[in-house]
Length: 264
Image (cartoon, rainbow, N blue to C red; front, side, top):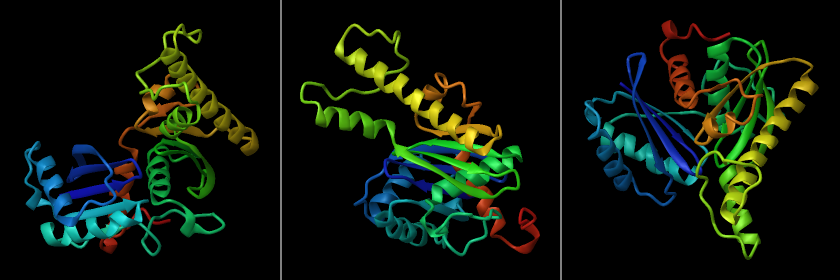
């Protein structure tokens, strides 16, 4: 069994693969100061909800954009699972050229998403990931990572609005607004956040397409992808498990030579 772990600034997403199938997935809040043992308790509690024992995990792959957490999660793997995890970063085989000025600057999650999207569609693709930041990444028709855009995430925008506008309350996004012409403050903020962010996403995707002079496939992932995609015709597909699928692909590409058939 393979445990795939994506450590983001807001959430940690975990997926348990049994052979080729994603059998279980979890999303928990990122706690930067979590200790090795606290993470161990968390994982054992999560596994208590599925039919597979945590001790049956044979392999772990980790992608992380929160450096302070990586050491604790690595130690957890060795202490509780007796596994040396594979860390997504410089030196591992991805099967994808990274055509960035400094490839080491690209977040591991962006590369993982790009690999999964290209493997799924085998054509030029724009990947939109709704995380703490919202990222837009372009993969060429030859499977090359070409770069993209980083914009403030939806929840960051919400929090900034609350902190900088004295009379506005902190709001939670509670679904699609019923109208753009809202009749109270909370509904007005919700409409501005959802419809405004959909406009931002649509605008960036269309600007990328104009600059590329092509019409790549567009796929979205991340916590609020489904909500925004419903208001954004430029997004053709939503895949909530894109990152976990990408981690599995990278794991396979770093095993014995017989499994490296994905390398270009």
